[in-house]
Each structure stands twice: as structure tokens, then as C-alpha cells.
Image (cartoon, rainbow, N blue to C red; front, side, top):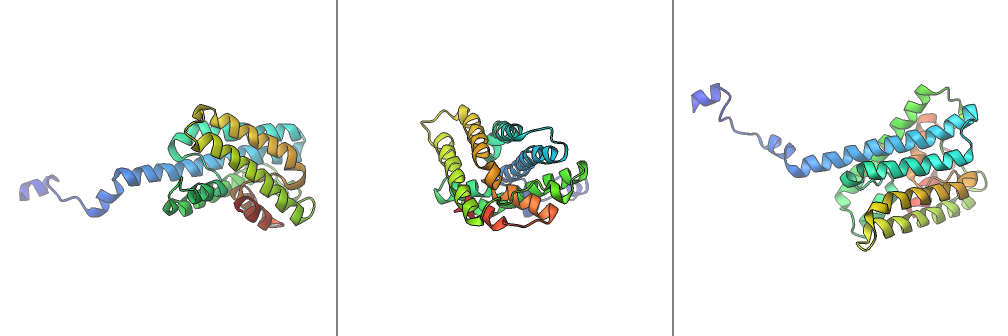
Length: 226
């Protein structure tokens, strides 16, 4: 026994190592990383198109709408099988309420989503000549109440589609990414000029923190979650 210990064999495995190497912990870690990375690319591409259009005027509003729809669709197909591709605290909370997602994982998911959004926003600040007037977050154009109602409606539509294509066993799962991406494209097209069409607290929180612009932020936290 002593010889085995000296040679590095037969040493008892610590409980901490066993926990870290357990399949449940590994799977959970993969899900958190997938949410963080997925949210990062969604915000990087979507907010990036907004920033580039404000700086150079080369994307156009329809281009911004298409960018948001395409990046969400791409990331749903990329990491949906790992984490469920929420990228949105409102989606995570909704799934938990309807018992489609464990409550114990809600807070870690939301933290990952907000960190991914913040990291993407900081990346855009570093890589683009962004000034305060080029704010790529979301601020109400009209009244806060008007924006709150619009955010509620478009987020409800998004959740309705997600529930139909991603949680119903009768739906064709392979089309989930297309349906969700198309819904986001349409919502941005309709509500974008008024509210910025956030539908996602993380999408608004990241740019707000990075650029220190918190005007109307509560609208984009309360509206989608409610």
C-alpha cells in the first residue's frame, strides 16, 4: 500500500474531485458556458449591427431586423441541444414557471446571460469608435408606459412561439430556430422604432452598464418578465 501511494497509485480520491467530475456538474457547466457564449454572440451581432448603423449608416433598419433574426436562429441551432438556447432571462423564468426548467438553475442562467451581454457590449466599445450618441442599447422613444405595453406584447408573442415550437412534443423541433428567429425579426421590424424591441432584459442591461446609460432600463426589465 505504501509503495502504491509513493508511486501515485491507490491514493484516495477527494470528495471535491468526485463532485467536480460528476456527470451532473459537467453537464451543468456546459449549459452555463453555452448560455454565456450564445448570449455573447447574439448581443455582439445584434447590437453590433445597431452600432455600425449609427456610426457608419451602412446597415439600415431592415438590415438590423434581419441581423437579429438570423443570429438568434443560428445560435439556437448551435447550442440549443446543450442549454436550450434561452439567451434571455424572461425565457428562463417562463420555462421555470411552467415547470419546463429547474428553479435551481434559473439564477446561474440569468447571471450567464447578463455576463454574456455585458462582455459583448464591452467588446463593441473596444472594437468600434462608439460615442454616447451611438448608444446601441434600448431607450423608449415615446413614453415609458407606451414602451412598456409594446415590450409586453412583443415578448408575449415571442414566448407564445417558443412555447409552441420548443416545448410541445407535437411540434417539429427542427423548425424551432427558424420560427423563433422569424418572430424576433418581425418584432424588431414592428416595435424597433418605438422601443428598440428588446424582449430580453439581458439585451438591455449589458449595453446600459457598458455605456452607463440607464434611461428607461426598468421598462426592459419589467416588460419582458411580466
